[in-house]
Image 1 (cartoon, rainbow, N blue to C red):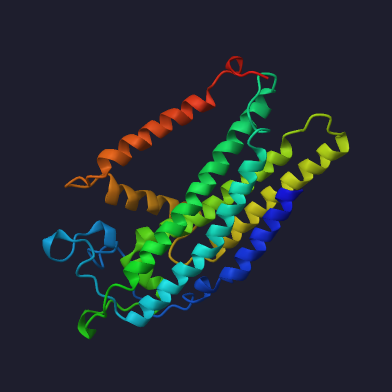
Image 2: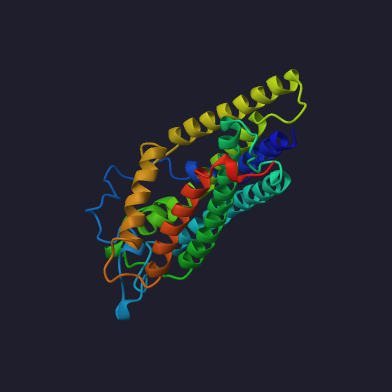
Length: 289
């Protein structure tokens, strides 16, 4: 029940903090001309281009209006608050269930699988929310670090999120995906927690737990539908994910000259995936009750 109340509090806080104002701020189209087509500018994503002298990224970046950039910075600051709240709730959930969610030798297969997915979803949720907070903080610093553009070179965006989408699309998507997917992962983990029966739990309690789990999943579907209906730059959430994978691979994987940190984060990513696979296929015989 504590997890259910936590879900409700977080959802209400998110709605109150964001107010979905960033979405409303750029719903009205300024022009029918597509501002964000890849052919419109070779620097549609700032991370994908080397600008300025001495190979310093973002050195020559200028915005149409510094006031619009300031408004975009305010949006990044607002997004960090609910992300931090979700991250804190995830840590509480993980700490309260750490012992109870350990796979046991006597567990049924579906219970064992649910426990493994619970721990995976909670940790990835925390990581995604922290990523969203970090990227929003760094992007906010970048937004306040560059001046205005001369009139003849202006792009033509009028809303703060149009500025973010044009100059910092990868960062914009990272913040959005980090917050939303982190929220989904946490809600999914709480739903799994409700499904796993406790020792000596009555049938009535199990039925109520299934009801609460189904309600959380229904809430996730509703949030996804609402999000898709309010997207402006993309068709749906899956389109957002596809675009993000392309931009991330272009900026951090398929790039020459290779980034020095790629020699660390690419092997680390592969190693983490191997460890995750080994964790999920761990046989029950190795566990003690």
